[in-house]
Image (cartoon, rainbow, N blue to C red; front, side, top):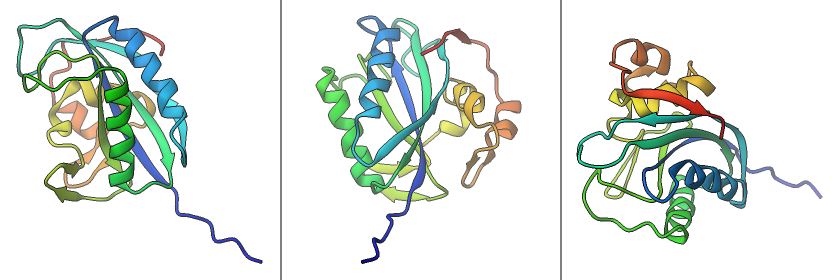
Length: 168
């Protein structure tokens, strides 16, 4: 009997929090990512403090990026991420506002997906230092389809306001 192996895909997840001990929220989310069936946490970045983007009247964020190898479809992976957010008490309110935990599917291989509630690569990730800085730590040559490599994009944006604060 021959077992057919499922295709594995590289997926990069952005993690962010600015409420209720943000660094611990990120660490706890990384543990939860390890528990997703058909996924393997390959590597995670350091933790970074970043100034809020968009809605400025809120505490600084703690951000990180995780690299997963997954056999899940993009939609199934997104559902797993949303379940982790919900288990941590995530409530959606103000756009770009304060949050206990935010998990974003940034990249899924080289796929470009445009669905009503799933866009990959994640919208505007190519212009956000709080995503590109931690992503460059773990994979500077990652390609953001339609935009270029992380290293190229990082060279063209302002990274002030994003500083390393320790390991996850």
